[in-house]
Length: 295
Length: 295
Figure 1 (cartoon, one colour):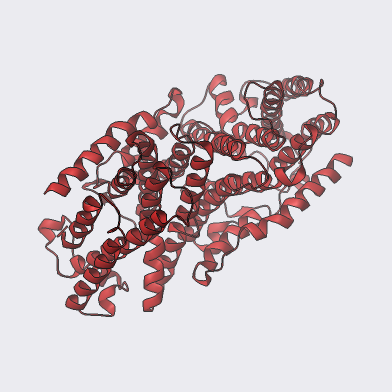
Figure 2: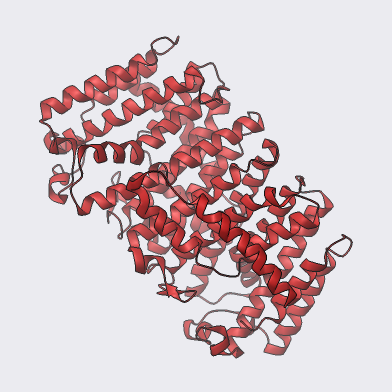
């Protein structure tokens, strides 16, 4: 409960800041901005912004320096959902209980809204006014790497290819590490940059990456378990979707019990990376929350 | 002829550099990179990279500092073409005489390739190693602004709305200023950044913007004229496409003769912005070349 309240608090910060970042003075482009806001301000748990804000706090940074990065990563994430939902990808008509972007605005505007939202996200990062230019530049370059073909988008491509033929276990791990893991790691790293930690070799940056990679992977395993044995009423979506699509999941390689134990072990290791740092309790609790969630 | 040789020389620099910027060590994402290279290295006049390189040279910068920016802007441009050609947008099967990206790789990979190519373009800009971080950051933030909803993508949205209802003259100007003008201006400005000119208020930056806005607009007017009275065999594409689509063009408001005179006047003004700078001849000649082209 306590962690859920903290999540909601951080989400509220982002929800309050985002609309101001997604508006224009040009009435002729009001439709595009409306479509961008529709997806970026549609709720969700705001896990990525939470990681940005909490890593920044744990490492002694200022909230105001983390907030532009938190909004940036949410724009990047929301953009990927718009494009993922399109008919040529997953063809989903519903997202978070609302019609998807292309259902409301048409595929042409949705395609553009995804492009514009990710670009705006990158720009928010690049225009963070609360940190030195060299720090902002390094953070932006990192975000671009993790979002692009070496990160999230590369993972999406692996996923598309896997839908057509069964994946082996290493490919499944590589796919998740990129598809969702890269942006979760980027979130933790953005929090570090906001706290002035620039170098990849700084042990705090390395610990943030190790933690984020662990909870990102555990998150996926739990997702697969919930799809197989979760409660549709609690989840708010159909279960057994992976089965219907013939998707390779962790349960293609192990039983539900083994998968649960695997997720627990990974989470334990992820959390241990932060133990030496004062104030790690919130992030430790968060990892447990992700593990034990039932939706 | 001389200007065409210079264009070809600069294009060769970009063509030589781009493949190295678009490769991965992860065999699992080779397909995505192949799709990115397919569109980014498919020729074209490379007008935008030319502007980056020539503005940098005119203002005394080093070619090596301009080249990453030149490749970056071409990636951004190529990405916009991939998405523009998709069935939900213009639904074009051919581009520069070759099948479009989605025809070769499928719509799902093409959508991702566009996303990944634009992200890689931004990243190339952000990782330019030949300039101080503050300069690189300012250049990257400018590029993100000009490519996004306030620039190119906003212009694309205006264009989509105009297809559904006739546009007035001011809207036509606003649409072109954003849809193609913003990236042409960004090219000229990137050349300035590469030469160490950072401030918007620097008279050289202002001159570069004025020049680029002028030639960008003249380019569009000439495009409209060629579509109406050009030679299909020389153009290598069907003429009267605007008529068929019921598009608002400059010829919706004036005769071919008046449009030609208008383009000449704008070009003259654009060129005059550079006159005070030594070495303006190449860019002056380039403006004339764009005006008198027959394809």
